[in-house]
Length: 182
Image (cartoon, rainbow, N blue to C red; front, side):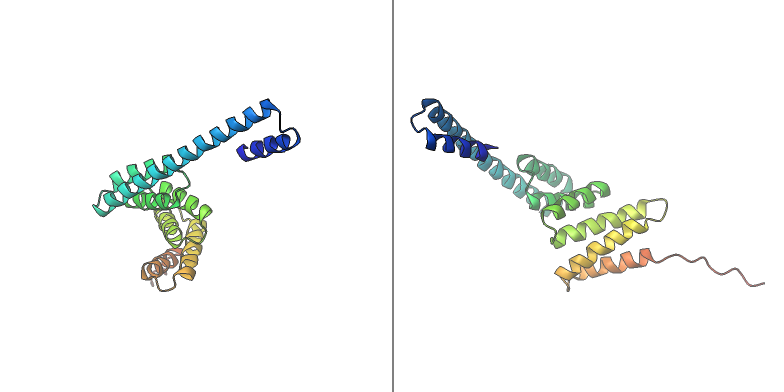
């Protein structure tokens, strides 16, 4: 909207350059744009600083503190995909599977070829499927698709291959044992 307003005022000024009201409007828009840009830079700086604090907390083994910092990073800049991806890992470490799955999905909306996002969403879906009281074939199938996509991006990743093996084993139908012979 800001850029559209600037374009409109500039077009009007081109037709009537002496209009003092239009000049005042243009100055007001330019000041608002400068303020918004400065605020955006500050938000991005705070987002990066909070993300770095989260990284330090993760290295120290404090997933709960890291979660707080990554959440602060996202509050300052919701488009910080790295912070969201890292928060996904915190949710996984804390056993908060649904939140991990939701955050990983947002990471993948922003960056569909993010191997960590694919791996983490598949991990969350695996855990959600294990928690369910009844079989979850669709959830397992979507987790398998994520892992296969991650392997397409990183074919030598052993952790991802191991997760695929686990998921495929979980997806195998369980057949009841044969009745005892009499």
